Picture (tube, rainbow, N blue to C red):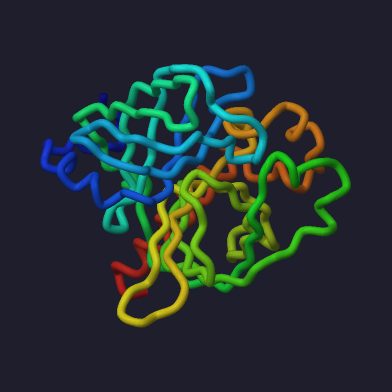
Length: 254
């Protein structure tokens, strides 16, 4: 299995999988009507590329994956996000088995150019459950700071570590946007800061309004007010051009 923005790794990474015991992973079940269904699970034991996990629960808190299936697995190892195809084997017990493909992919490389850009901003964790009509006025925003920025995603310095695969709603404010812009994002990797520092680094992949159908249910999307749908594919392209200009000016010392 390969992806356009991934790197196939050698089998030696399989030998490091025992480091994931008692760690959380995410499991995506593709091909559903509302896009990918995402589950969370904890690794209980590792035998080569066979992982025993607890019963995975839907990331929105509803339902369990009880049927054997072909899935996509994401996990963080030494601060790096990886993904792999896997066979999910379900039986009548609470424990489940994942048989991981040997061609594990490094998944947190951004195709778009990153620009060191520090911005004070705010975010709030979200899910389908918190996107119902009328709840936006009650969102609790958390302060954070950007570390780097691209049109495809952002690196945040946050006070709390977020689960890989979970979703954020960001409220960004940069010069070209002429005011705040609400942007949905998915956590692609998350790692605690080392050397006695508090907080964590969190890599966020932007989700444009045109691609929300791959992440959220139709019911949740229809409840969104128009102000939450401003970050379209076109706006993302404009942001990319803007960041390129800033980068070129920095290179020229302007």
